[in-house]
Length: 275
Image (tube, rainbow, N blue to C red; front, side, top):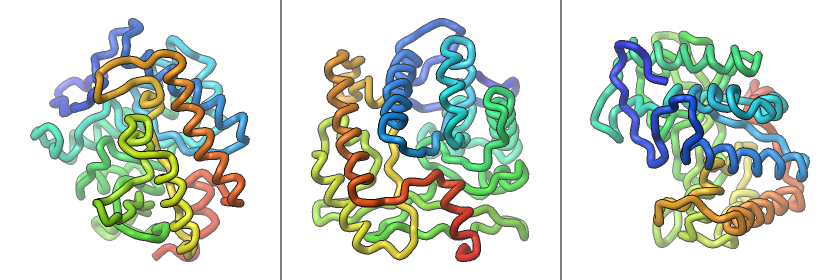
């Protein structure tokens, strides 16, 4: 959904221009999202979805039942067309005015299709800059969740100030390892780069060190249905294996007596602690 007069800085392994027809990009998204929603319902877990405007538009026109299901969860913004807002991925920077235009259109798309004013944002590629925060503040966003921090305990949100105003930052944790670093993005599990037990062990360490912060387990639904390293759509049995691994991981959270909240709910609980 390109904007007239705005340079498109898009870099995505599954990006293609949506022309109203079914294609592999959205097919993987639909398969993965359907499986994710079914799993969350089965486990009775809450979640926050960060969604692009283009994806919502496609779902509205082709899979209205998924739009209805998404209304049961918190939905945040993930850009309009998976733009590289800072230019770090594509080399094409986007100015403040262009970012504002993109984010305003994406925000309005969410409002029109889901009948809700979104309050959270996660940037494509987790890339933001000062202009991004200024645009989010102008549009009335409560929080951003795009900055990664290396930590052995769940990070506590804090405020980012821009021009005497502020927005809450809900950091995404990176766990330091002797062999490098590890995030709780599960794409590495689905790509067979990390094992399920590594995620479980890392979560246990975070739980032990918890001082009231928020731990986030994140993934793109299409990762359930697409193998990046081989550039192919997965067979149904392969998709089901990924779903089984995800279910195993999420079930452990319930057994461990974790409180699973949406980001918005969590921020409401700790609003007096945020500095």
